[in-house]
Every structure is written in C-alpha cells, then in structure tokens.
Amino acid sequence: MKNITIIILTLIFLSHCGYTTVYKNQKSIDFGVNITKTTGDNEINNLIKNEIKLYSNNVSQRIYNTTINSNYKKKVLTKNTSGSITDYNLSVTSSFTINLKNGNKTFRFEENISIKNQSDTFQQKIYEKNIKRNFASSIRKKLILAIMSLDDN
Image 1 (cartoon, rainbow, N blue to C red):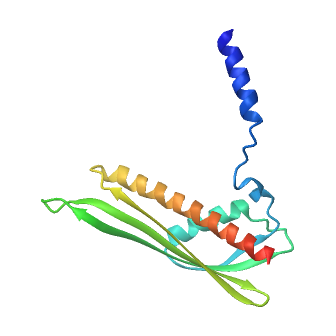
Image 2 (cartoon, rainbow, N blue to C red; image 1 turned 180 degrees about the horizontal axis):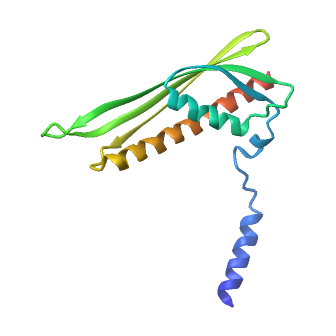
Image 3 (cartoon, one colour; image 1 turned 90 degrees about the vertical axis):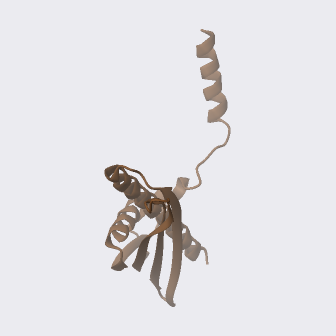
C-alpha cells in the first residue's frame, strides 16, 4: 500500500512540473517541404527525405521546393600494431537549397561521430546504419528549425 501511494504521488508531481519537449509543436507545422532534386549519397538522402515526409504538411499553402546534396564519409582514425583498423570517424555533410520568392537560401548541416571497429562485420554494418538514421533525424530537426526561422522573418 505504501509503494502504491509513493508511485501515485510521484506521478502527480511529475505531471505538474511543466516539462514540455523542445519539438512539441513540430507536428503542427504549417508548411511543406518538396524535395525536387538530390545529389550525393543516395542512402543518406533517402533517409533524410523519409524523415522530412514525417513532419512536412504537403496540403499547406506554403511549400518549399528544396534540393539536397549529401556526402557521407567513413574515415580511418587509428590502427593497432598489426595494422587492423580500431577506430573510425563517420561524418555526413548535407546542404539544402530552398527556393524562396526573393532568391535561394542555402543551409549546411554536419554530423560526425567516432566509433570503435567491431570484430563482427554484420553487427558493425547494423551499427553504422543506425548511426546514419540518427544523422538523418538530427539533420531533419535542424532543417525544420531553419525553415521555421525563415517564417519568422
């Protein structure tokens, strides 16, 4: 009985603490993003396009035609004494050119991470794929915030 009371009180206090997520209102975005052209790394571009589709309102009056150019690099950082790779740096650079009434606006976003090489190549590929998804999600968040700042001006 005492544990249930503690749990209920904890839930009551936490529900009234005023916490809201940073991206709470992003689902109610009143603009759409139309990807007209992609160049560079196809896998990263497709992941970013899928992320943008989740948050884009394509029935809005404001549709931003955008082109994407993404580059993905996997760079060897260190090797051990036998010459085997031990650490990698994964990086993505994405440039977005948005067509506006008074010209074009370009945004450039970068993400990178250093990772250890795993002995299991299958697990390594899964891990890298998850990192790419996280990169795409982060870049989408930055793009949405950048477009929202365009709307404020």
